[in-house]
Length: 431
Image (cartoon, rainbow, N blue to C red; front, side, top):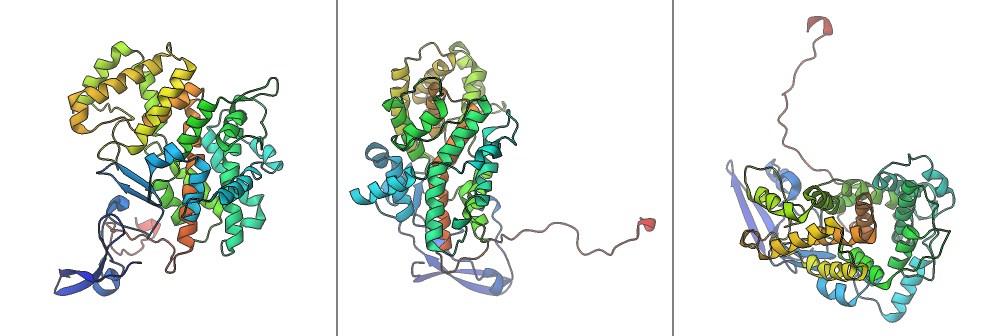
């Protein structure tokens, strides 16, 4: 916690309470209200915690007005251009970019942990074939605590490290297994000779009957999707992981909780909702109709994949993702797919139309990642599982950071109670 040399004074009901003001390394100042209840017998009311800092963190920083996203101080654009997902994983986990030796060791450890316990294959058989892959993923990740007993002690730094490596390594395998299971195809084992993104694509799209060669352009785009989604400050799923972890829950249970939260359509399902909207529009000639509806305040229709709750300017991840989208579409030569035609035309209009420019409704990362995943051949049901495996390293980094806090306490939000006051019980015969 930084030192405070300023205070804020809250005065009410003839009481005055002095509260420290802290200045972060970047971002707005923070008023420490921890003693507000003890000294003033009052709480704050902040639905959604949009004005409340629930933790101190040094992992990720977002400036929504500037359209800026930093991983440990490094701009996301630089990492996307020069780094890889696993190198960024090391950065998020340990705070610094790795040396050549450190990166080689880290990649080796992750690669050698990609296989899952063989009995987990039988676990999948308990799910219906038409189960959503996210439902399957929530179950199997939570069940990892039943298979890996030697990394459940959160008070042991080495066990925390082992759990972190296992989760980063095995989430792509489990996500690919969930996908294969939904198709009725056999599971494909991971390969140690492939990089992280290529390995995931191979497990998703290869079959035993014939060889499958991963295209490097697709692997690069996949790796970039992973990197751009690796962490995003204290969003709903990250806060869920921290809250679950504050109770002392094991790491696999905490990550399963984060996956469950991410499943919500207002959070991780945005790119799926975007593709579904493009399919609803159907053809390019219907775009003007939907643009008009989007501009109509009395119409409930909203364009998905444009604008962002946090970024009031351009989503810094979107520019990078657009480059990958263009590379993938050029590679695959997809010119007759109506959904992608609609996407490209909608993108052109959004970048030129004065209404969209004035409202700063630029295409966001979900718009472009959905286009890429659609072009690769993933069904929309797999979009959120891919988001989940990307975000796993961020969740783990935040979880480890929380456990290292000196004043860490179990999460216990307060409430503004508006129910009945105390009442006496009435026997049923007298009601």
